[in-house]
Image (cartoon, rainbow, N blue to C red):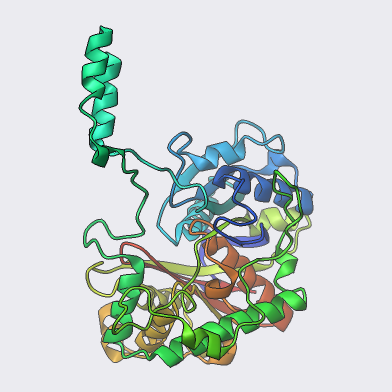
Amino acid sequence: MSHPSGLAVNGRRVAIVAGIRTPFARAGTALKSLSAIELGRLCVAELIQRTGIDGHDIDLLVFGTVVPSVLAPNIAREVSLIPHLPKGVQSWSVSRACASANQAITDAADQILLGHADCAIAGGAESLSNVPILHSRGFSDALVAASRARTLGGRVQALSRIRPRDLVPITPAIAEPTTGETMGESAEKMAKINHIAREDQDQFALRSHRLAHAGTADGRLTAEIMPVWPPPKFEPLAADNGIREDSTIERLRELKPVFDRRYGSVTAGNSSPLTDGGAAVLLMSEEKALAMGMTPMAFIRSYAYAALDPGEQLLMAPVLAAPVALVRAGLTLQDIDLVEMHEAFASQVLSNLRGLDSDEWAARAGVRQPVGEVDRARLNVMGGSIAIGHPFGATGARITMTLANELARRGGQFGLMTVCAAGGLGFAMVIER
């Protein structure tokens, strides 16, 4: 789908017009009282108000989340039912693990390219403070049997089957259902396979915090953030609360490995934290943006998704997606001004960087030449998910607006983003100013 001026069908191009997000807060802290739906509604309402767009101009809303509410599984529809939007706005939810907001954005972009829509909102939200807690099967079976019993004796008999082990709650695991391997165990395995040293991981994590702190202090990161007043205290939160300005390499070195305590190198310090937050972007056809007097931040030039065996190197699929996105864009790494790479773990980023410069991975991606060595001076120039945080469903939209904003500030033309995701999934997109 390459085109001299970007991803286009029948001459249509998709413009990224604006973006906004909540602060990202470590799970269990400032935003713990807000559900993912509430975080999504706050973002979308703010996006509409800041851009001044009439809600009747929005054709559709696509939203991603990874741990959906059992009571309201279609987060997109719940978010779209705010007073700022008419009830007839098409809305649907998507899930592609950590690339869910990217999936939302490309879904919406595809509808615009096809001419089915001119204006869309896409993004995602996650509250990892509010994950559903499930009962055991034995407890559920006993409750169902009791509810069906016709006599008091029957109900007592059904409930008497409950054993202490049935009362242990079950929480969603951040593990692969097919392999049983957690995300952290996979990152640990990747560190060993790719010979990623502990020191390199800690230095990369320190870089993430330092750059994110600088981007917060000079207002570049906070420019994309809306303040939130969460109940019950309604104390304002206007910046990400996981960025550690006082982080030092000595402190990072002191942390114990979490997933392989004897031989491991992945720690809480060189991993992204569990996070709450929401993010949304406004997409339009180029014609619609110009007709409304909106100045596009960037255009979507190309994108690609990829997948590999989750039992192999779980978080390496961006290495398969990025070369395809670049081919579709008609570009090489030398053309790219800035790279935004989601930081699930320092070991994953460093493994991905090594993979992008590997002939073996290039062959697997079906391209002749590797993408090449990414210039660190152009990579995650305001830090990344290790410092900023990673609300699973929202990160893709955060990276999209961060990349578009920073490209504009630097006068760059092309940006590349990559996101790794559970299930062995990967995403890459090229945007153009």
